[in-house]
View (cartoon, rainbow, N blue to C red):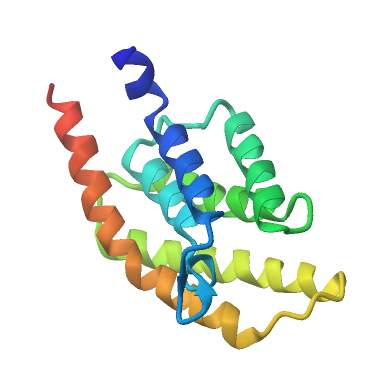
Length: 164
């Protein structure tokens, strides 16, 4: 049982974050998901800290994205596109690094967020959903600002488990 949990810890945590984000937990009258996208942070940090991670060759990532789309009322496939954009940038960053440099990882995470949110905004406009650019900008900035906290926690956990 412990071997299963260790092997699929990233997928389990990502799924739990999707399920928890679907609850009506709000700050200032808006859901937490309007302020920060925890799933994008988790995907990026887990891939950077464990370059061999592939979320079941992308199948688990795709299934989790479908669950997120259904629970949050998004267009089918929107989360999948965002998840795979961030995952692709993280995979590229993980493949070229010799050792972990937080600043370069944080910068590339920011680039992946800009690209992902640009695609998201384009999809929302294409399907005539009313979405404010300020809402996306706040989400992007807060997600980028919260990234160091999760990077520190997950990189410490992965490095502790690697020494055992």
